Image (tube, rainbow, N blue to C red; front, side):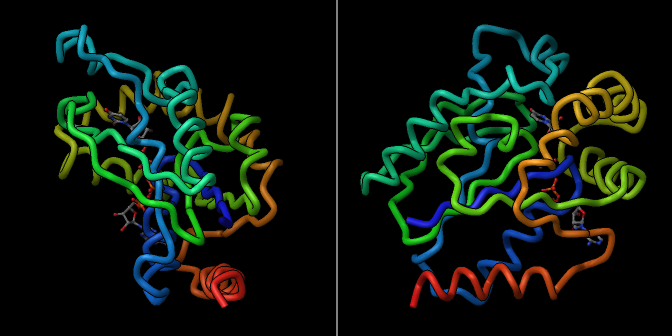
Length: 202
Ligand SMILES: Nc1ncnc2c1ncn2[C@@H]1O[C@H](COP(=O)(O)OP(=O)(O)O)[C@@H](O)[C@H]1O
Ligand SMILES: O=c1ccn([C@@H]2O[C@H](COP(=O)(O)O)[C@@H](O)[C@H]2O)c(=O)[nH]1
């Protein structure tokens, strides 16, 4: 199994890049695991409290479970991945089966901050977009899709998102083998990653 890690700040375009990469690849040969599915279970907290959680700090992620799942998949076993709800700020209690594939993409803002995860990755990619671009994209998404208003999103950006980005996410760029500039759609970089994956699948 080839494991590709794709990190980068919120709104940099990780999900978009992943979708572009897997778009023309054979179905069933490439799997995707998102760090978002591994936010800690916060069922013991009311929603009001959960909404105040710093979801940009590495401690908000259940890295042990993510590591265990990657190890199992690498060994050829299937896993039950937790399903996360951004509206509830919590795991839903449901799981989806994920089966081993020849290529596995792991994506998330904090995945390159964890040394055990980094060791499991064959290729480490960091997607870069300028912070103003990312803030604009994030604002649109949080307001349109994730149940936050403008003020809440800007407050969160100042209190958690920006400081955690500077403390943890941006420094993890140094571990990347490839940095994809993504202020604009970058088809050249996506094609290069696809070529590497196709070689593995051949
Ligand atoms: N290169 C780009 N140019 C303009 N908009 C983009 C670009 N890449 C992604 N987007 C848009 O920005 C938003 C966030 O992208 P997404 O891929 O979800 O980022 P991430 O997964 O890193 O948070 C989405 O609405 C997406 O369509
Ligand atoms: O309940 C939650 C959990 C996380 N977030 C935010 O999500 C982003 C990471 O996701 P990207 O798709 O990479 O942007 C992170 O910045 C958290 O603040 C959330 O809004 N709600």
